[in-house]
Length: 114
Length: 113
Image 1 (tube, each protein chain N blue to C red):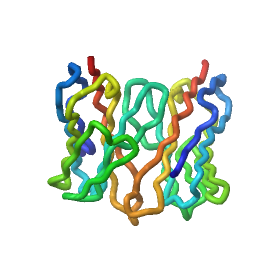
Image 2: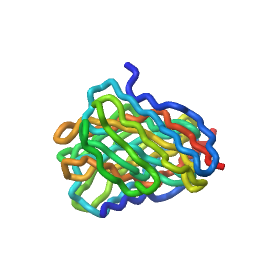
Image 3: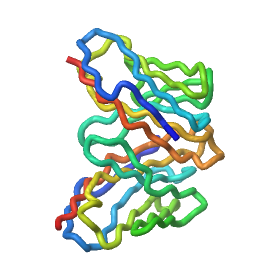
Image 4: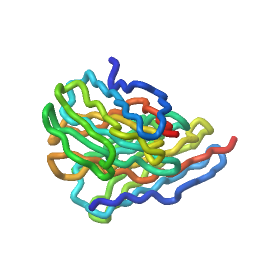
């Protein structure tokens, strides 16, 4: 099983550029989410989705946009990259409650904004 | 707002020692709690998942306990090995349909040979 797949693994952007981080899962999970992890810190929730067509903001949503047109895919868009968005981004998925809610993670996308 | 705290931030122990990592949370209305391992530059690997109705889960040398009333979970590692060196993160899922997870900042464990 592929599980949760993120692309690209590494990306360097210039300030002001836009890009999309891709996330796909093949486990038929309803719930998908994006986190960012900064050095020495835990994960902070950016956006999440409880199903196709439904998205909501997490703790740090500014500067990011998401959509969920299918169950499998949940792309994260950086509208105008800023150095403060330099981070490692993780996508996760799980079955929606009241199922177990166990989170499965991708391997991460390391983004540097110059 | 749920807040998750992990103390200590870093821990160094000699090989073979039994150790306990702590995770505390402020809102006891949780659905589950999950422990992860993260190696440097890598993603998160799930270690143990405890549902709110459970008191503990075990996997090999790992045992995780949950006390919702006091807002605490512990991860017990028996007979630690250098290969256990990593950052350990706990995450709680709130008791809502959204199922959002809140993470602690992690404990970085070093096991010295």
